Image 1 (cartoon, rainbow, N blue to C red):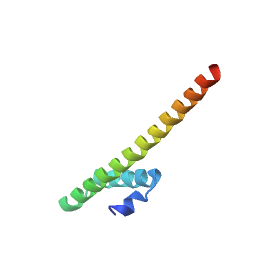
Image 2: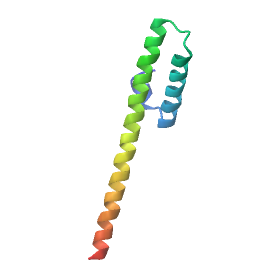
Image 3: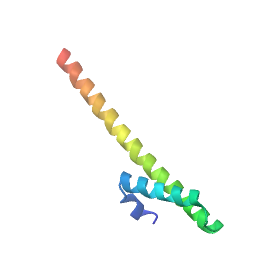
Image 4: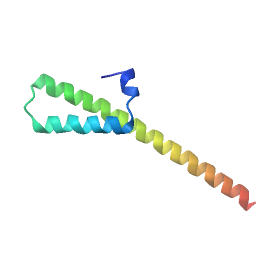
Length: 76
């Protein structure tokens, strides 16, 4: 799963898949090629989660700034 399909994953889906990837890597028993593929997938999922969290942070910052702005208008 890569590309546009990944963009349809929610934060929770990406996080859960990342947890599973890490579990499989920690468990061992995979070939080098499988381990590399899992590592690469984990990196993709971690980046996706990071983008979701950065987007959430930006939305919170914007909401707080708007609230602050409206509060300043009321004070005048």
